[in-house]
Amino acid sequence: MIYVENLRKEFKKTIKEPGLLGSFKSLFHPKSEKIVAVDDISFEVPEGEILGFIGPNGAGKSTVIKMLTGILTPTSGKCTINGKNPTVDRKSYVKEIGVVFGQRTQLWWDLPLRETYGVLKEIYEVPEDRYHKRMAFLNEVLDLESFITSPVRTLSLGQRMRADIAASLLHSPKVLFLDEPTIGLDVVVKDNIRNAIDYINKTEKTTVILTTHDLADIETLSKRIVMIDKGQNVFDGTISELKSKYGQIRELHFDTDTANVEQALAYAEHFGISDDVVTTETDGKSVKVRFNSSVVPVSDMLSYTLGKINVNDISVKDADIEEIIRRLYKQGVQDEEKA
Amino acid sequence: MKQIKRMLRIHRIFIAQELKRMMEYKGDFIVGIIGFLMVQCSNLLFLWIIFSQIPDLMGWTVNEIIFIYGFSLIPKGIDHLLFDNLWSIGHFTVRKGDFDKYLTRPINTLFHVMVEKVQIDALGELLMGIALVCVTLPSLSIEWTAMKIILGIAVIPFATLIYTGIKIATSAIAFWTKRSGNIIYMFYMVNDFAKYPATIYNNAVKWIITYVIPFAFTSYYPAKYILTGDNPLYNIGLSVVISIVLMVIGIIIWNKGIGAYESAGS
Image (tube, rainbow over the protein chains, first blue to last red):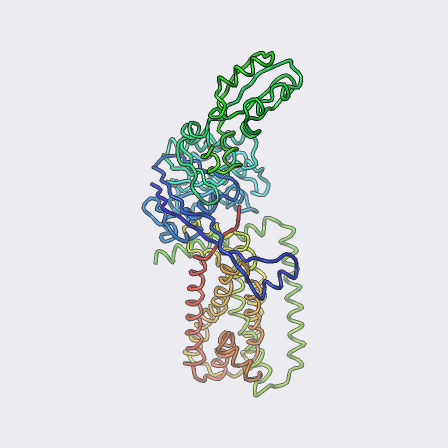
């Protein structure tokens, strides 16, 4: 369905010295450097899959999405979606895709929401009867009824996002690109939107590429993730693979009456390891110790802790995906692999 | 044919959308109309003051000069009315990354940008131009032939496209420079010279408005043909050729520019 091969995008950036003088200098002697935003990225997405596309800010996610949607022309490499090249067959290609950029809107700002759908119907040449059926369907999934006659500028962010997603689905696209569709939304609206995406994926076999910083989106929606950092592909696999590959991080939870647990336990000194490998958080009586189980085995950790202080209610947990990704973003993947 | 029908339909829908948008804010709309009428009245007064001071000039009578002036406003007004949105490409659409929207829709991007907005203010220029032409015509003793009428009218869309072509080419520079508002402005403002007979200027200006930024072909040359019947091949024919050439250049630059478009971070 979607094939991305060795995709690369370079931007030219002019370097300016700071201040007004620097700006003048650059006007007459422009210096520029090449920035590689996306460097040799390849992946595939089969039909009907929801792919979570993640990475820290500035990793190149949006640049990849923009190349896949025909907005940017790749410097080299290629992407083929439904057998089409987005930049070459742009007009026929974009009829088959839906795009939502969470930070922007494609709705007509000053007019009632309904007007936007009326125009999009013409732009995408949706026949009258299909349009009515489609609107009824989208209304059911995204619950637009209550604000469809309100001007777009008066919509809340959650309503606007639902409206934008509906706009991207009006022409029944085969592929849906969602760039941060849950940004800035409350928990309930996030849930609604996730359910809608899931429902449309299941009922219509729509392939979805989703970028987000909210990992709950990924956990509820997608089985597979592609993670990029500094323009490079750093992980491609299922969430359980991610957990088993990088998931040596465990959490030890317990309650204790001992005061000053951190000093009493002094894990780092005892095991002769650095503070990065084990971190301790206390909140009143309850204590949370995060450690790398490939460096300190769980059994050692347990027996040392139990031997040292009085403990109630102890448990060991898998680190959640958020924790894994936090570590990956922070340290960079190379470091993680060395460890 | 089907393609053209679809484009016309979309154009109509965008115009309807624009009119609805203007009427969404009723107060602004009404004040806008009042302001518009005031500006037109003051323009009329200003023109009257200028033309009542101008004697015959380089062999042109005042009425002929007013006719050329009026004729120049017609293609300018049509372009301004229909395709004004090109300015936004040079000013902010590219710089802010809002051009993304056009690229994700199954319509030609240039067409989409051109027809997305209408500039109602331009009706002032257009109506003023038509009025000045109509008022001066009876006193000009023009020898009317069928060919003159046909060519005189047929040249108007081509003259319009000279404006549009120049705007497309200069706005598309923004795809590389991110901003080209001042470039469009610089080129566009040369049209002020084209409101008067080209012969009143020195050779440099005349040469520029004929061959470099050929606004003289939107007004002076076609109007001269209507007035004198001289050399239709040059006065009208070259207008047509130049407008086609400028449109082709504009479209080529535009299409190249899309490949260079960089969007903006989000």
